[in-house]
Image (cartoon, rainbow, N blue to C red; front, side, top):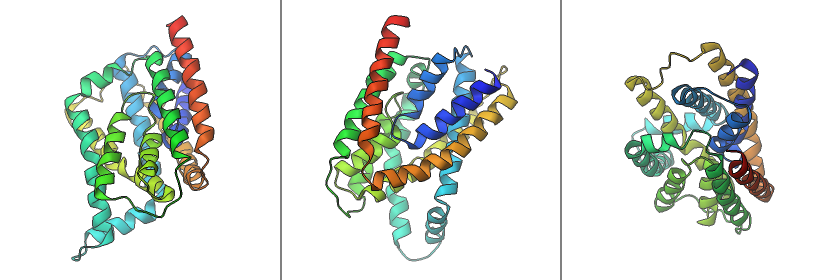
Length: 265
C-alpha cells in the first residue's frame, strides 16, 4: 500500500464512519478497487488504525459531553451522567459478546468480499429509508432501548452494515429524538473501539512484519481530520431528516457492488 492509497482509504474511513453508509463496507470496496494486495494481518492492522483515528475524532467533537460525563461519574449523587454512562455500558454488551466469541469468523469477512458488502449496503439503505419517515419526538434513550440499539451495533460488525446508520435508525424507529439518537450512537462506540485496540495490543494481534509505519500515520491523519468534519456534519443532517439521500446512495452502491462482485470476483 502506497501513500496515496493510505490517504484515500483514510478519507473514506473518516467520512463513512459517521455518515450512514458503512465505513467497513467502503473500506473493503476501496481496497478492492485500489488493488490492495496486503496480507490479511496487515490489512486488518490498517483498518484498526483508521478506526482508532475516527474514535479520537469523536472525542474531539464531543469533548464537552465527555467531560460532563466524566465529571458526573466522580460525584457522589446518582445523576444524569451516571444514568447515561450505564446506558452506554448496556449498549456495549451485544457487540462485546459477538466480538469475543466470533472474532475469527468476523475477520474472515474482511477480505474484499464485496458481494456480501453489496447485500449489506442494501439492508442499510432500507433502515435509513424507514428511519427518515419516523415521526418527530423528544424521547430519550431508555435502558431497554440501549440494549436493542446495542444489538443493532453488533449486527453492524458485518462489512456493509453501517454502524451509525443501523444504531441511529434503530434508535429513531424505537421513538427516540433524532439528535439524541445520533449523540448516543457516536458515543456508544468509543469504549468498544478503545477496548478492542487495547485487547489487540496486549495480545500482539496488531503486529505485522510488513506494516509500514509511515503509511499507517498518513492513513491515521487523513481519517482523523475527515472524521471530525463528517461527525459534525452528520449531527446536522440527522436533525434535518436528510437520511433518505444516504439511503438512495447505499442502495445504488450496494447494487453496483453486487454486480461487480458477481462478474469480476
